[in-house]
Image (cartoon, rainbow over all chains, first blue to last red; front, side, top):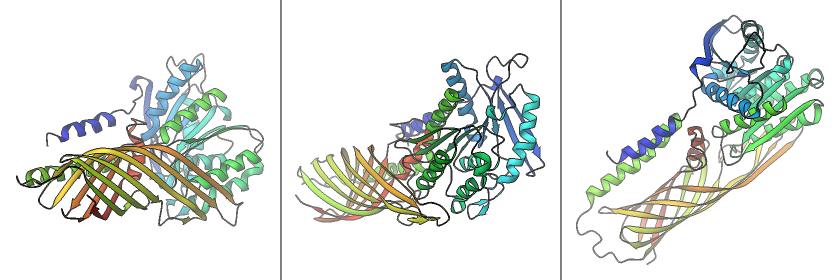
Length: 263
Length: 204
């Protein structure tokens, strides 16, 4: 057993690398949603030197907040500091229902189709609450949604069906394959309404996401945004040598850098 | 963390088999061991996660000394065997080629030997998918890349005569922790973890 200790240590040390955002700058509460009949844990990361009397801030809404909030908040702080520009408020949306229900637009084998109710929660309950309690910009162009996998699918759903809410989208390994590529149909149906809006979109994927479902629909979605949206600033990035989960954090960094440079 | 637990299981099995092997060694086993034994062992196997990939591999092991060996490991992987047509997404091709070399040490028991090797080399991945949903435009996308490939190979040889059974397990150490220390990168390792069975022959 003694010889197992070094191996265990390697895993323990590596597993402890999670970046935790400063507790002093984080506020936590929960919202009982009437739209989706669930209670969502919410966290808000404030910028350093947050000054509500003199300044308003842009917001980034992070899906799968339990997993990605600290990483996003910590790196927003670093990137804004490096670029010497104003930081944002990072809002973590935790789990109220199962994510496969809240993040999927239709009922299919893989999900419960609760995205519309979840978006109603974001639009009618969360955003009004954040914008009344904190010093944030209320313009569409100051709001960003960030999601990975089914979270990326929900970000795509926000783009197609709730485009008036968010001006910026960070979609990481989005599950565009879901329900026979339903997202492509939603994009097509809402194109006339959305294509004249200004938007900033980052699309990220892992190079080794080769399990027969990710790359081709991702490319189809990207090509449509590129071909039919005149006022879009977009970056598509394939993270080398990494798979679905492994590419998430590198793509979050790329997406945040793109957002801070071009917002 | 779930991923780390998965990875821990093969590490534990490797360690356990090594400990068992060490206690089993009789004093006279391999007393007639002559250096430079060359073995070749083709095998077939699976990368079980996340979708089953078929692996066809060949291992050449040269036992320079009783406890020191050089290994060459070549593998062809036919990726996602059972998922080539999903939600109108057709896989046109999807395969990997890998060549690694390395050094290892062997522990002996009565009728088997257990070799643990550290391997390094390169891997070529190539795949192409086409979205053929009649409702939408047809879109093809492809990706090819060469990546480093590091890992630990456990090779169990059962039978000490000219022909033997070969079982092996390859545990990748790339991309985690070589490319990224971020634990989420470990899904790339687990996707390339392979379990193989085959028949080997001693040439010298």
